[in-house]
Amino acid sequence: MPPSNILAYAGLLTVAFYVAYGTDPTQLQDFCVGVNNPSDGVFVNGLFCKDPMAVEVEDFVFEGLDKPGNTRNQVGSAVTRVTAANLPGLNTLGISLARIDVAPYGVNTPHHHPRATEVITIIEGTFYAGFVTSNLQNGENKLFAKVLKKGDVFVFPQGLIHFETNIGNTPGVALSAFSSQNPGVVTTAAAVFGAKPPISIDVLTRAFQLDPRIVRNLQSRTFE
Image (cartoon, rainbow, N blue to C red; front, side):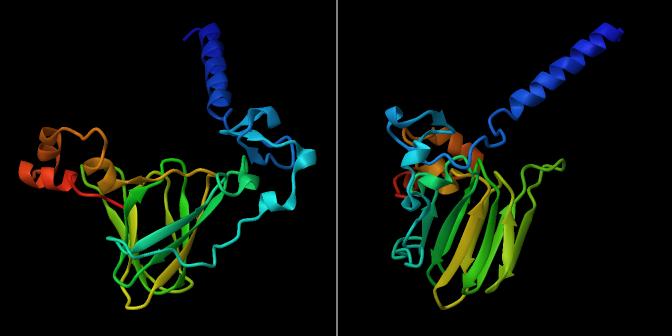
């Protein structure tokens, strides 16, 4: 390759590198408390920044994470999320938190976070938790799972399907930290069988090797 082409190619790579990382720059101010009114500031990372002179200590406080979530539902679990949506001071800081309550033998059903890695810490109870890899070269998906007790920490890599179930006979509690202020969540069963409008029955029948009647039955249900 001629030297001029090599330099041009290197320049393109450099531009691509800075474009790719341009959405997560080094902070140029102490904080950017999120507000919904465009007249209150500039738009940064999904929210407008509140005037720094109008920021109050309450913008950095969320109360109530000590209260158990309501696990009286079909899956026996509840997730209380603390993100930039309900803790404005998190805006642009790249982190968030969640409390996970799981009733005895309940489950936080398979799901994934498209924008964040999750670190879970068991506070009370005994959990069986794990994640599944993306498609490997041999066509398989490997499961990494383990029984977790109070004080144990487990990592779910970004974008990978994972789950937690309480295998004990007492309520379980866990705290999760995320590497994004808005990790997002895609609940596997709800996304596949509860999409609106619904995914074609023929597609799901072939994908899951199920009788069409079973697919229709699953699509008629309400998923948590």
